[in-house]
Length: 109
Image 1 (spheres, rainbow, N blue to C red):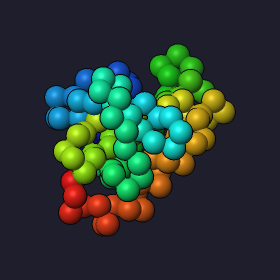
Image 2 (image 1 turned 180 degrees about the horizontal axis):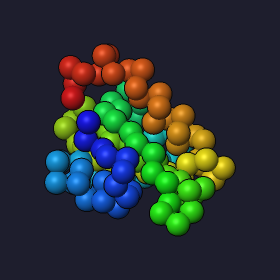
Image 3 (image 1 turned 30 degrees about the horizontal axis):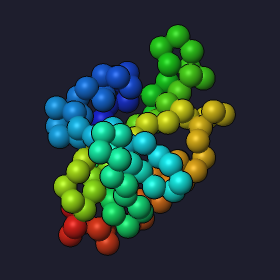
Image 4 (image 1 turned 90 degrees about the vertical axis):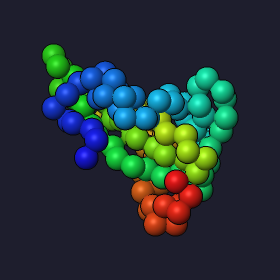
């Protein structure tokens, strides 16, 4: 387990960057993109490694979720979203659907 739910979102992001999850992903049009290079990845290109939900320190309804994703070309990074009422449902569906492809893609990651 890489992520620690008792840490804040920012603390978890700092921790995973030290462990090689250095890319910040952006979700758009049912794909994720490396924010720096703009390289895109579809569902078949990556695997969901782990995810963790974080609650706001002062407001538990201020929740977020952090996904750790590894891609077939060795790129590893983070994708985050609001959680709960303000969640991006398309992003959530995309990220969670990667989990079902874990066995299929393990040989590529």
